[in-house]
Image 1: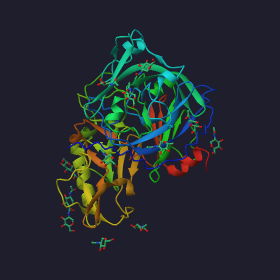
Image 2 (image 1 turned 180 degrees about the vertical axis):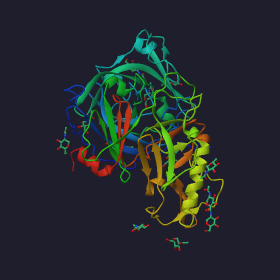
Image 3 (image 1 turned 30 degrees about the vertical axis):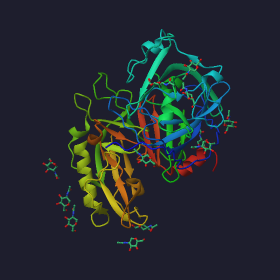
Image 4 (image 1 turned 90 degrees about the horizontal axis):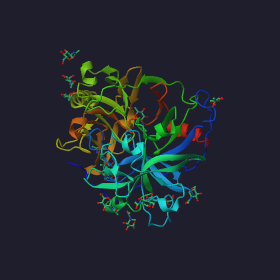
Length: 442
Ligand SMILES: *[C@@H]1O[C@H](CO)[C@@H](O)[C@H](O)[C@H]1NC(C)=O
Ligand SMILES: *[C@@H]1O[C@H](CO)[C@@H](O)[C@H](O)[C@H]1NC(C)=O
Ligand SMILES: *[C@@H]1O[C@H](CO)[C@@H](O)[C@H](O)[C@H]1NC(C)=O
Ligand SMILES: *[C@@H]1O[C@H](CO)[C@@H](O)[C@H](O)[C@H]1NC(C)=O
Ligand SMILES: *[C@@H]1O[C@H](CO)[C@@H](O)[C@H](O)[C@H]1NC(C)=O
Ligand SMILES: *[C@@H]1O[C@H](CO)[C@@H](O)[C@H](O)[C@H]1NC(C)=O
Ligand SMILES: *[C@@H]1O[C@H](CO)[C@@H](O)[C@H](O)[C@H]1NC(C)=O
Ligand SMILES: *[C@@H]1O[C@H](CO)[C@@H](O)[C@H](O)[C@H]1NC(C)=O
Ligand SMILES: *[C@@H]1O[C@H](CO)[C@@H](O)[C@H](O)[C@H]1NC(C)=O
Ligand SMILES: *[C@@H]1O[C@H](CO)[C@@H](O)[C@H](O)[C@H]1NC(C)=O
Ligand SMILES: *[C@@H]1O[C@H](CO)[C@@H](O)[C@H](O)[C@H]1NC(C)=O
Ligand SMILES: *[C@@H]1O[C@H](CO)[C@@H](O)[C@H](O)[C@H]1NC(C)=O
């Protein structure tokens, strides 16, 4: 069952909205290119707020990572969800509302002199939107018309347009985005939301990363205070130690279940503590339909594994926690559609003794441990106990054909996406401290 969308727009935490640009000169690509540094925060976004592509490859949960940037001339403050799993950036646009709250839930194009709608004769409209879940079309004014659809079957419509986006002190003109109508916001009673839109960061040609032509980007998400840092451009890793890399996997032939714009990597196995699960290699290799792809996705909260793999992991985790954790006494309970291993825990729980779960990639291991393994179901109690669920879920229950590594599992990990070398670098890090340091606060 799909969880109900809620009207609550609960902010979990706010951090330092200190737009300190952290300029590091990139020597290899362009000596003038600066690294842009933005504080990240995570917040609960109403379940129906973010669009869901109909290609079944992705599934959004409602804790999202956001950054504050500016759009337009003069600049309007907006808060954007970061999504490495989608291509088109979009803003909720509304020409009639006055901009009193800042950041505002709407962007007003009529108040911006740099707003420019894209005509549908433009190649941006005709060729670069072909792979969109819903390709762009032509509206009655001969402008490029875009449609986004949502999990609750509603949709929003708008125009592709170009605008000046401001990241810290740096402005990037002519960024293509979707200026969507705002009827959607009212249906979710999200009018108190400060989140104006989404930054699409996948490998597609209209994504922000592609448009800015940045050679790499990195982020570090804190596990303790819902903060973090996003760096666009090259960066200096002396504070996190050395990164280990795994290559990005690209395929030349389009396959129905393979998202070629995703950050795809090669998963080779899974360990619980030091025990490698007995899983044949064939489980991790995409089949002739593309099913079985492994991707990193900041637009998804938790991590989902294909059924056969998930079931083996679940069995081993139950075995290794037998005696320390009590499985929830309700076999029919499933958290967020796909997370069916839950525990009853008395008190606040001390998870430091749990067996770690490691995702083994070609070249690097990503270890998930401690409290990152269990997520407290909000508001649910059994007797004196709280209910916590294992943060890995079953893709099959979502109707998804891939392994998706969400942002919860990427906490306390320095993650670098190197688009030039086509690889992903990982290092375990304490992101609250790293974030303060990178943002120049520590
Ligand atoms: C979204 O957040 C609300 C408030 O915390 C919660 O009750 C609801 O279960 C969440 N839904 C999903 C799909 O996570
Ligand atoms: C945008 O935010 C900055 C920093 O918080 C603030 O100084 C500025 O006044 C805001 N601009 C508008 C138009 O609200
Ligand atoms: C926004 O788009 C939706 C989807 O087509 C449409 O139903 C709605 O009427 C539009 N709202 C406005 C205010 O134009
Ligand atoms: C707002 O106005 C701009 C410029 O007139 C127009 O291109 C755009 O479609 C309008 N957006 C909405 C959502 O009405
Ligand atoms: C703009 O916002 C107003 C007030 O919230 C709403 O009535 C109107 O339908 C919105 N317009 C569009 C084009 O979404
Ligand atoms: C929106 O932003 C303002 C100013 O930063 C803040 O006071 C307010 O609490 C925020 N609202 C929400 C729902 O996050
Ligand atoms: C990287 O950081 C270290 C220590 O923080 C500093 O000594 C070094 O100069 C920096 N390198 C670059 C290229 O900024
Ligand atoms: C691993 O699984 C295969 C197939 O399920 C089985 O034949 C084999 O005995 C298992 N190996 C171990 C060490 O459990
Ligand atoms: C769990 O452990 C028991 C006893 O050690 C073993 O018989 C069983 O096969 C294990 N289950 C799984 C799923 O590994
Ligand atoms: C847990 O341990 C008990 C006794 O130590 C055993 O009887 C039971 O089968 C174990 N359960 C699992 C799932 O391994
Ligand atoms: C659970 O916690 C409550 C209150 O903290 C305590 O009274 C109770 O004895 C605990 N139960 C168990 C089984 O530990
Ligand atoms: C949690 O348990 C570990 C041992 O499993 C212990 O070393 C640690 O002190 C405990 N932490 C707290 C806060 O109780």
